[in-house]
Length: 287
Image (cartoon, rainbow, N blue to C red; front, side, top):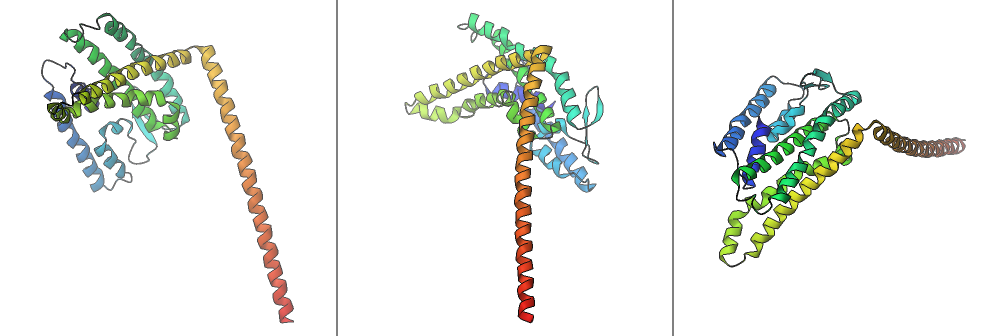
């Protein structure tokens, strides 16, 4: 629910049409739900939960609570239709395979959006219902990718590596934030415009337009990649290439380990020889 309110709030900040009931609903939803995370933090602090510090992170960034683990062992995560599952590499692969078909569908939603924008490019701003439908579809796509990214990063063993390998998904989630920046600076731009500096206004709107085009371009690229993963032959080829990369990485690690072991052994021999020489000198001096 918090993520849904956030998606609506971002749509509102972009200056796009929202639900007829008003945009205040999203902001009130965020404000009313946020204390729940603070209460959870308070409860786990009073109960001295071994991992209560993570609730501080959830209170600061509530979306991360989607992938929150159990507070006793910190090794399990709750997933819809699956219940509590132990977090390991097998779970990451299973969740990724389960989500991939649905995410392909969300990514392909960008194609009709592109058709609508190209066909009604001049009139889409005048047709409120059409503009609302396009912006809402974009918000739904963003919401799906944001939730998937949070869950996958939460269960991934190496989070930085996962983000590096799925940089397209990361950009899809971050780019709408860039679209919001011009809206947040409208007041400053209004003051600049009063002094005749209208060019700043056009720059901000160009930035928002570029972010939107990049957002949809990465969606098309992401959908192509995910469709290739659904093809057994393409998937097998990708896995073989990935296996070769891992084998090469493992060989590099083993080579570096052998070099370090040889260096440590050489240092130990040197130290042993020095100790032996020192003992011999002490014996001679004693005699």
